[in-house]
Amino acid sequence: MHNSTPLPKIVRAHVLVSGRVQGVGYRYATVDTASQLGLTGWVRNLPDNRVEAVFEGAGAVVEEMVRWCHIGPPAAMVKDVVVEYEQPESLLGFEVKRFE
Image 1 (cartoon, rainbow, N blue to C red):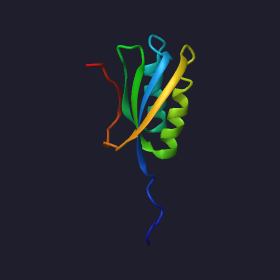
Image 2 (cartoon, rainbow, N blue to C red; image 1 turned 135 degrees about the horizontal axis):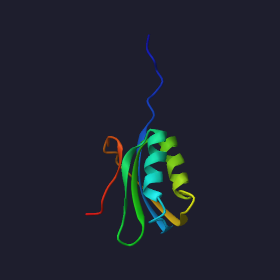
Image 3 (cartoon, one colour; image 1 turned 90 degrees about the horizontal axis):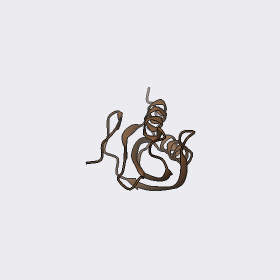
Image 4 (cartoon, rainbow, N blue to C red; image 1 turned 180 degrees about the horizontal axis):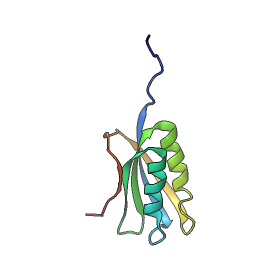
């Protein structure tokens, strides 16, 4: 028996979030939310006070995560979210990265 249900297309969103998004638990809330949604990727603070993140997973789930980024955790005040779609890199897990 052949199952013809196509696998969901994996997409990669590269997100830059600005506003009051550092020192408010944004990165850790991002890890929790992305992990609950089954996404892979990473999140980190940037020296210019923005948060940068990459999410990989099924398109609809990545879109849900991008919508979450516009709100963030309760203490955050998000001003802007810039999203670029890139080629997925088959990342494993979801982690907080340090800016190099």
